[in-house]
Amino acid sequence: MSYFINNIHSVTDASGAHSYPQGIHLRVSGHIISEIGSDLQPRENETIIDGSDKVLMPGFVNTHHHLFQSVLKGLDVSINHRLFDWLNHVTFPRVSRVNEQHLRAGVRLGLAELMLSGTTVCADHHYIYYQDSNPELGDILFEEAGQLGIRLVLCRGGQLRTDRDMEYPNKNTVPETMDFYMRDIERLTGLYHQTTYDAMSKIVVAPNTPTFSLDPGMLRELAGFARSLQLRMHSHLSETENYVEYCLATHQCLPLEFVAKYDWVGNDVWYAHMVHLTDQEIKIVADTGTGVSHCPSSNGRLASGIARIKDMDDAGVPISIGVDGAASNEAAHMLSELRLSWLMQRAATRNAKDITLERVIGWGTVNGARILGYQNMGLIQPGGVADFTLFSLDKLANYGMHEPKYSPVACGDASVDTLFCNGKPIIQQGSIPGLDRDKLKADCAQAVRELA
Image (cartoon, rainbow, N blue to C red; front, side, top):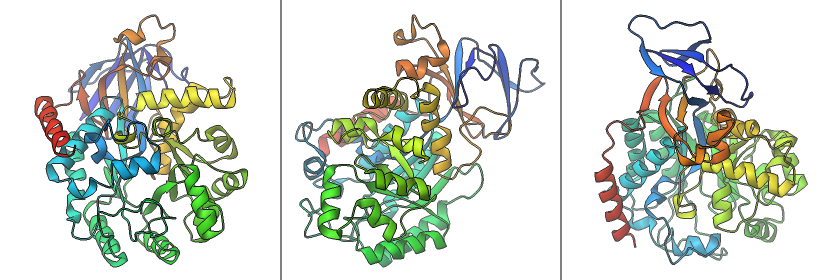
């Protein structure tokens, strides 16, 4: 299919909001943005989409999520707790109770929320795996993403031990064995992992937390296993000060020193949160090209702190954006996540000049794409993969805006008129084709009742 987007009001990406003049036209041929120009004309049999009064931006790339948590929002038992108490009250008591219906409802809801905020790629850290569970429930994520048309990167989580010394072990499930974990990753890789420039599905090796979830020897073995399959690696790290305290007490080193010792750094690795890093640790991630998924809403919701994102970015660390799970965010909204990143990094550094909107947009688009292994995505340019959003500035938040090109991120809200993923419109005129919202609402309500 070929599409012609005409008379686009503004184009905004990491390279600058002024890259193209008003009234520009864009052509999509197959999976690619084939042309951009002021003098283009539609061709016979091309589908024409009106871009007037709309802002065109690259599709957002969400590099850390827990989709099943979309049906665990706002639990009263945890609304005012920090991370470890929150884990003990929310996820640990419920992971063994999540069934197929709950999972489908949560995944569909989370992906729909992401899409309606302009997201085309979701990396989901799915960790509902334990002995006696059905590992193929995780395959549901690919089924749901395929029906909606969004790219899914399954970060295959798992816990390979219950640490008796840890204050909050998961007492409700028995960990998988290393052999079972690796065999299931091989199964998933054979079924779903794509290596093309426009891959719609990928597999990542992603134990829950490297310092808590497996023995050090396992960590090194798992790194070698992942790299033998040419798979990327992901996990949580240094989310709270507890991570640092535990690592110093148990392993006599800082968390980044620990993972570096066991081969879990490099340009094929990225970590979520990274809130509590020393200058020494920032140097480690910068020197090794290890990436970061910044999750500002979750870090705020759980009172974890504000990550030193500007310091890391200045040092050359690859920075991306994640919404994290809705049980610690209550939303899956990439526009609001980018806006919060913009505001809180300015507040933390007291620096407005350098924390530009374009810089933050880069974290949420091209940087995230590269961290996930997509080299031709995240910018509006000829030859780039056709993942992009046409935002219609018809919400009250957008009224009174002098520069529409800044409106979606600066306001943290705008209507997605059209969302393209891999050259196909997966949102049209503000609606997700085939999404039964009444059924989704009922399914989510049932999951909430059963998981209360």
